[in-house]
Image 1 (cartoon, helix red, strand yellow):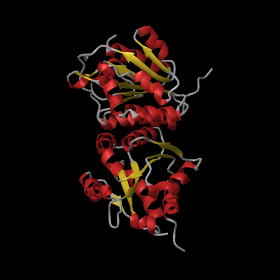
Image 2 (cartoon, one colour; image 1 turned 90 degrees about the vertical axis):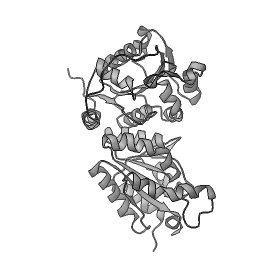
Image 3 (cartoon, rainbow over the protein chains, first blue to last red; image 1 turned 135 degrees about the horizontal axis):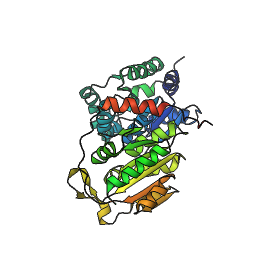
Image 4 (cartoon, helix red, strand yellow; image 1 turned 90 degrees about the horizontal axis):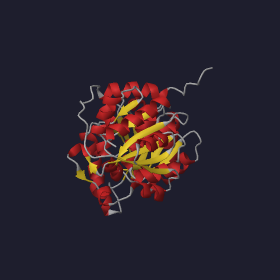
Length: 167
Length: 189
């Protein structure tokens, strides 16, 4: 039986004991966002802009929570300064779950420029990133948080169109 | 009122309420460090605009601890969406103090939109925040600091002559985080 992609990521968040999630939606994140919203152990904070989510997650971590930011890769562009001058400056961990648009078979042309820049931007910032399949996503998400917490840095899990199609 | 006077009042109120206090980027954090350093102060050194977001994260994570954020007009204008997010989560333990000097004080006092009439208190109310107060006098500020929601306090432009914060980012974060993670200490008999 094939693993449902949203459920696989959600199980990874649970295995990592993520208990505060900020989000800006992507159409591919809708099932995952519903799972997070309905989970009483997770405080879900929808935000107006991804950078705001980085700030809320940083505060929550300093007060003892395990935070994640759920967003589309367009939001990475909105978050660069906060990732660098808040998380990386102070040594604050963050798990980013990113719907990676703008790759192969992307129907929306506006997604393409940031889609192509997502990996170079993460590499330039020395933020580790992972691209799991639905079968490996639970493990990858949990490990990404462990690494982030251990090294007190942001880590990114990139989930492209193929990942969400694999139902 | 000078901004450093407002900051001193906020720091005093934070200490009296055993509250966490977030200082905004630039001179405001330096003034806070100079007038009343406590391990419960978080000095923001980067990420302009995010003081209120950091404070909201703290308040949601530790609902039994009061969180006071010292923000500025320029910074709030950079992250106006924060007012809507605060309104919809409305933590009872959260107080955002917007010190409005109508300019970008740390970069040469260039005017912000509040100089031209933008009303941050009206924006906060329109975003859905219930408790919004505008104050100008020290006595009114001291009283408002006991509450929650948003305070917009008019302060004079200009910075005090204060040194650079002598703590490293790691030191600031580690001592603050230790305080933020402690459960509220119960008042003992």
